[in-house]
Amino acid sequence: MRIADFRSDTVTRPSQCMRDAMAAAEVGDDVYEDDATVNALQEAASALTGKECALFTASGTMSNAIALKVHTNPGDQVLMDENAHSMVYEVGLPATIAQVLTRQFRSTLGVPEMTSIAAWLQPETLHTPRTSLVVLENTHNRAGGAVIPLDVCTAVYATAKNAGAAVHIDGARIFHASVASGISVSQFAACADTVTFCLSKGLGCPVGSVLCGSADFIARARRVRKMLGGGMRQVGILAAAGLYALEHNVKRLADDHSRARALAAAFHGDVNVQPVTTEPATNMVYFNTKLPAQDVCTQLAEQHNVLCNPTAQYTLRMVTHLDIDDECVDMAISGLRAVCK
Image (cartoon, rainbow, N blue to C red; front, top):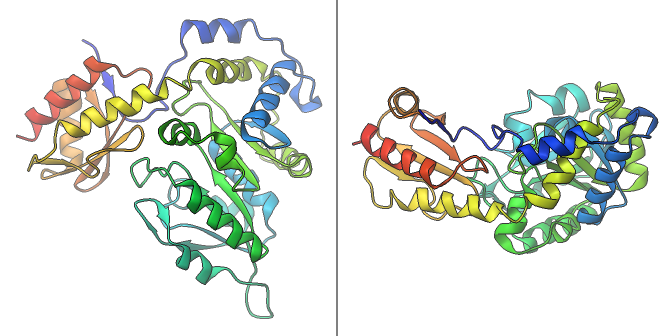
C-alpha cells in the first residue's frame, strides 16, 4: 500500500531524469576547483542570487556554520530569531564552531520585529561583545514556512549595516519564498551579505546546499569548508542533481504551496484538529490537535500510511513536496479526520 510521507521535503527521491544527469556528470577534484559540474552549479547559483561567487556544501547546516565562522570572531555576538533553525536545530553550532554569543530577537509569524533587532545591535566595548552578524531565515520553518517580506529584509539590512554588522540569510527554502511572493531570489539576496539555499529541501536533490557571497568571502569560506570536512572531491555527481533541480524543479514549487493550502483548508473550523495558519504561505502546514500529537502521528502511520512529525505536545507538521500528489493529500485529510474525530 502507498505511503504518503509528509515528514519533510527532505524525503524526496531523485527522479530518473535527475539520476541520468548525475550519471552523466563531468567530474574532477573539487578541492582543486577543477570539477566542471560543481563549477557550473556555483556559477548558476551566483547568477540566481546576484552574488559574486558561490560554494557547494554538503548541507544547509554546514553552509550556516561556514557563514557564522567567516563573518565573526570568537566572542562576537550574533542576532537570530528565537526560533531560528540555527538556534533550535543545528546542535549548538554557533557556540561550538563559531564560538559566538547568540542573542534572540522576537518575530511575529516569522517576521522580525525591528525594535527587537535594534535593541541588541551593539559596538564592541571594554565590557560588551560587538554584534557582527544578523541571521534571517526565509522562509521561516518554525513559523509555518512564512515568507519574510522584502521590505522587512531591506530594513533589517540597512539597520544592521548602519551598526557595522553583516547579514546572512538562511535561505534553505528561499525558492519557496520567491515562488510564493513573486519576488526574485536575487532581490531577497540583495538584502544580505551572504545567502545559502538548500538543494535537498523542496528542489528534490539527494544532498547539498550552496553558499553565496563576495569573492573574498567565498575564498575564506572554502578554507572553513575544508576544516569541516567538506572537501568532497569528485562531487560533480551531486552537483549535477542541483543543476537539474534549478532548471526543472523551481516553478513547480507552486504546486506544493497549493496542496498545502488545500490540506489546511480541509480543517477550517474543525474543533479537533486546527491548522495554525488557515492559508499557509508555502509548503508547510502546522496543526494543533486535541490528542497528543505523537499519538496522532503514530496512528496516522500505523493505520493510514501517512507519515508526519510532532513539533510540540499538541502540534504536528505536514510538509508538501514533489513526491506528494493530490492522492497523498486526500490520504492525509481522511487519516486526520479518522484519528482526530
